[in-house]
Length: 207
Image (cartoon, rainbow, N blue to C red; front, side):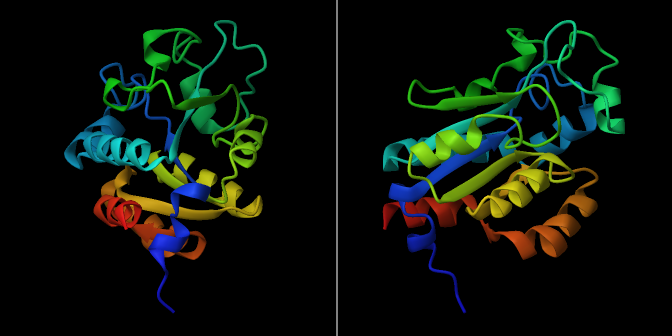
């Protein structure tokens, strides 16, 4: 049965989420060069910026899901290999640092919301994101950002578990290597979320 994108993405109940679209992750201060290169080659930042502009115009709230850590790493567990790698650099994504900032192409705009986390690899657990979305009347989240390997996948799983409907914007997300990212989108994300392109979302918001 075809998905009614106009209904699914209706501005009155939809928020656009950006996942770790930060200078120290995929921007000019990126700590993971391979991921940043993939983001650049797929125009992920440009596509997400187009979508964010359309979202604000349509009255859809843009919420930036970021990672940031205290300089002493207090409260941030090193309980996964990926987190251990991140913690090797004591200044990586430090609170208030340029690296922790959202990439300039995405703002943040004064109307945007920033929800940050200091532990884990996905944006809902232990943060105020769920409360923010529910207080805004959101029932559908539109996911962009990185990475399909962990963060975007975790976002989708958590959102579904919390009762949200999820749309993943396939040309505004990235994973590495590219073939693996595409396999995750086709074989795992497809079971959790509606897969859409930037132009499809923008068209639905204009309908």
